[in-house]
Amino acid sequence: MEIGNRAVKKALSLGATEAEAYIQRNTIIQANFSDKIDDLKTTASTGLGLRVILGKRVAMYSTSILTEDEVSAVVQRAVDIAKVAPEDPDWNQLNRSYGKTPVRGVFDEATSKIEYAEIVEDINAAIAAAYAFDPRVKPTRGMLQIGTSTTSVVNCYGDSVESKSTGGGAYILVKAEDGSLESAGTESREVRAWGDMDLEAMAESASEKAISFLKAETIPGGKMPVILDNKISASILGVMLTSPINADLVQKGGSPLADKIGDQIAAEDITIVDDGTLPKGLNTGPFDAEGHPTQRTPVIENGVLKSFLYDNYTALKDSIESTGNAGRSGYSSPPSPSPTNLILAEGDASPEEIIQETKRGLYVERVIGEWLSNSISGNLNATVTHGYLVENGEFKAPVKGVVLAGNFYELLKDGYEVIGNDTMNSNHLYSPTVKLRKLTVAGK
Image (cartoon, rainbow, N blue to C red; front, side):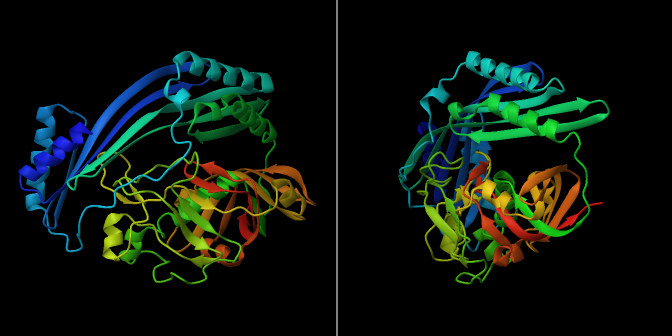
């Protein structure tokens, strides 16, 4: 906070009309492992991102060297850049609505004090669990990160906020071999607290997938009901909606949802919210990357498009209040509208009930390539690496190598047949298991 205040005052003394400092300090423990721990290290970093404004000229400069001389030099460079930057006719002012929203589950004391010994013990237990699950299984790759972050935002209007958070994620890949047959199984998890990670259970789940898919095959193609596992549904939700609900893209005319506020764009049983206050949410925080309080924002409510996601800049362009969705990919990046925790609201059905009520369809629990889908046209494509053919309410055969295709916006209108009750996250994206009435499945 002291560094931020010093940078802001220096910028004003050099002629800046506005200034804002964003400071982030991270301490991350990272481990890479296979059938043993390959490396384990701690990385500590602190960085300053400074925005300065001269009238309507905006510039940004950043550094990870926080000596007094370097901070002064960064301020001077930022001001010099702003002097020659083109004017932004839409610039209004920096965020002046500073504050904190009460949130829960963002910082875990035990996680902030975790020791190497505990991490090593849990990784070794996960490796042992994979071997113990089946002699045909071998853990081949894994990665874990866990740490603590402190974020501060200071501006020229005398406002400042600071928060601490913990969090991390892990990924485990195992392979199974049985004669000439080979398959892989993966599991991943992102959490706020180390106690919620459970590496051993992840290893067992990945091992079960690897064994189950030793004899997986491609099935004949066609149009059929498709059940998406909760994490897959969450990932697809993020791929297809993150850009279209970004107020910056909307204002530039690049979103297919522009001019549709108040329109029925989805079925009545579909509600999607962005919730920066979600307890233990992966992107939950008391304020956004500009110091604006976070909030719960209905995006689609009972099928009706209610709001886009705004940071301060885009909100002032539309003469409304920011939704607290300024995000940054790091201290060196400028803020822009980003989802906090994007959530598809639950229905009533359990995954078991969804499967049992399916006469014939495809259950999907892992895909690749969904990120190549087109969120503007709505064209959805993904290759299934792990799925099951469902017949008469039961899993009949493991499936791999088929491609899913459909139009996301058409699915929103009448394609979601059942929405489950088992919400799970894929990073900051949340969804229950869903059953889609019909997708094109390109098979053999």
